[in-house]
Image (tube, rainbow, N blue to C red; front, side, top):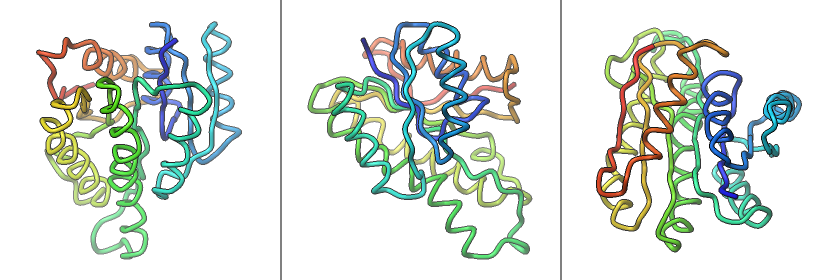
Length: 217
């Protein structure tokens, strides 16, 4: 059974994407900072007849992410798809946000994604296969002064995907991002649409891999 690891699983796009891959036969591991909420999401998957496990992770801590990836591979074998969905969705302008929280937000929005790539990509490259999927945002294309740390974070996430695409493709690893140009509510048709976009990226034949799909709810 193939393994899908979700980092920063939430009730919206994170859960919808996990459900999409679970329907295709993947074992799903959900991870986030709050165990009780993540267990509730896993329970929803299990009620639908899917295999789901839960782990704790602090997306702002590279060591926590590295430990998660190592633990999942030790328990379940190779991670076939890693989905980085963590984000600090803070509404704050440059005039109102302290530097401390700004840096904390970037640690989640960009630093955690980089840590996930650094932990998973070498293992995938050694096998010559694997997908690293990143939840992007429309603020990467049109930054909002009211969501400044999120805008800069999504721009950095997009640059990470575009910057690594060619080098990792040469090693058999597909990095892709869905740039979600709008807000998405849990359980909505838009959440399912984002999940389908991630599935399309995953399903591309290797010779036709692309790095980005822009999804507008």
